[in-house]
Image (cartoon, rainbow over all chains, first blue to last red; front, side, top):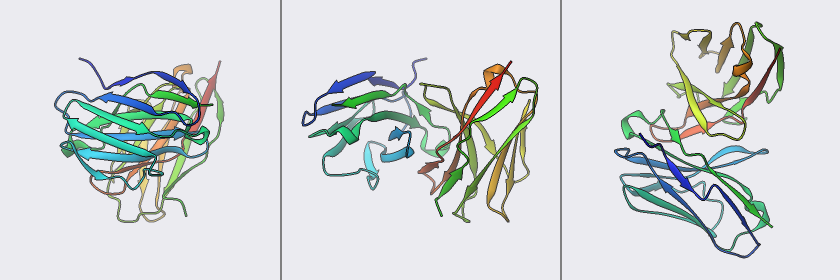
Length: 114
Length: 109
């Protein structure tokens, strides 16, 4: 049974470039979350979707960040333009809405912006 | 006050020791609480829920103190494999989980 799948695992890019992170949630899960993790701030919720609809994007740091969920099996987080302070591990997680404490995380994308 | 606060550690303990972590939270309306475990360079995984009456799962015991607004995690008979970061989690609402920054545990032989 495949878990949450994220790609790429690692991304190294230069400042100013566009970065797109991808996520495939567990089949049947109807909630999807994007988190960012840094040493200083820990895990921060960026945005979450219920049934493909964005519910709360208050954690998205700036207009440079955007997220989409065109269907139940795919989501993207885009950063344009990227900056060195965006360097972090980005996790996608999914859950059944009625069981939201049981988040299943993907392996994360380690982003380095030079 | 931060929504969820944890001592970052590290807690360095020998195998077989008992160790406990606390986590304080600010939202007095929170009804449920959780502990997640995160291994180095891995994703977080749900370890256990914290019920009002406490919760025990093998060597792990989670307790809730509503009056003082903290939850605790007790690990008995520590194993090398328990070495990880333990994240305290408090829901802000039915959908949104707030994670603490974690407490790192290192168990040595």
